[in-house]
Image (cartoon, rainbow, N blue to C red; front, side, top):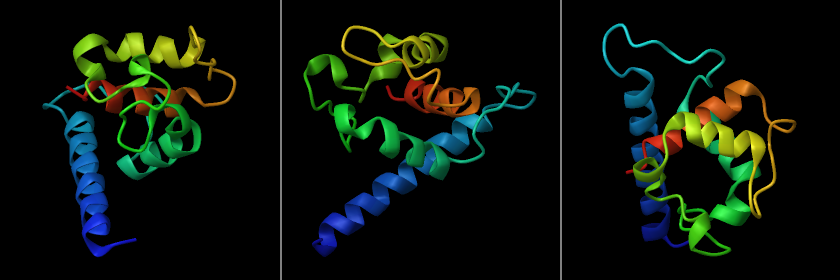
Length: 115
């Protein structure tokens, strides 16, 4: 992997980590979601293991425009995203039996921040 590409990947991971930290610690007294994942690295691991094949490494969508997640938070709330992940839809399979509630909540919160 070329050095420049490795640097970009590292920067993107750092940005995702910062975003997840901001989401998790958003405001004093903010209520955390029950069973939420405890860190951005775990969210990325879950995403890579379950989502990257259809949604791409850059959230760009690999099987059509509907699979692009780059600005998903502009279109859907965390609750809507949770439901989509759990129930599936159109060509997306349901993940309620494959992922824990905490894994789904972590993904939903992270994706809701994509604006």
